[in-house]
Image (cartoon, rainbow, N blue to C red):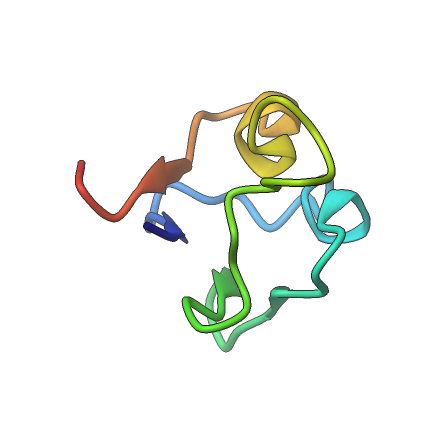
Length: 64
């Protein structure tokens, strides 16, 4: 399952460089995650790095 960035995003950009799959990009209002590229960091890190570094908890599972 992939992650998404909610509209709580403050566009700080902390998540973008942490994504090993380059799935995060700047959208028109806030950052967005390409669900096709997102692997929740499986094979790279034990936890999704976008969620780990997000200061406003805007990176959440699509299941949420």
